[in-house]
Length: 191
Image 1 (tube, rainbow, N blue to C red):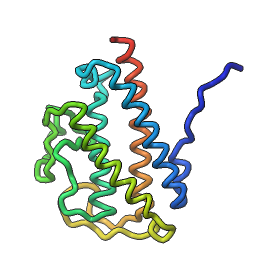
Image 2: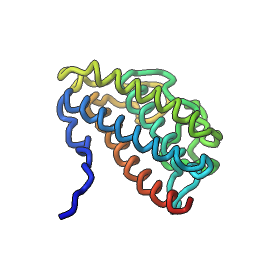
Image 3: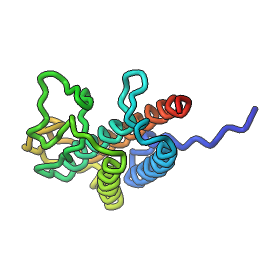
Image 4: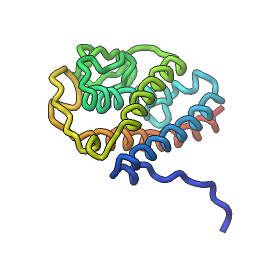
């Protein structure tokens, strides 16, 4: 058997305890740091290209802004205006919003044109907010039920446990990282 590169532990398997959530988030941070460094080696316009109709690298980063805004800022923190204008909800694409769904009242501009650096600045802020949440997490805090947020947005106004919300963030981060690295391999071959 040949040597295989060390694969990080799947962070989704660690989120049953407050310490596990912290460890999972550390894996997410380190994995994305390495992947962003890899992406930066490509020409900037390439990171706006779709592979097989999927989100571009930049769109993926915008979607993860939305994920953090929805599950951490809106639900866990209860912010009344949680969304950044560069957020990308599911089923939206730059210039191709889902018919009949208007997220402009949430403060989101799905058609916004943004550079990788602009998007990554927002991502760094959002990832830092999740870091603050997980650093302060206690066993009781993990099971705390978030109050329903009456502001417009997603998820619908319902009471959810902090642990559930963090599992959603970690799951989305990991899944979209897998998609992004798959597509970066294609973009690297094209360049």
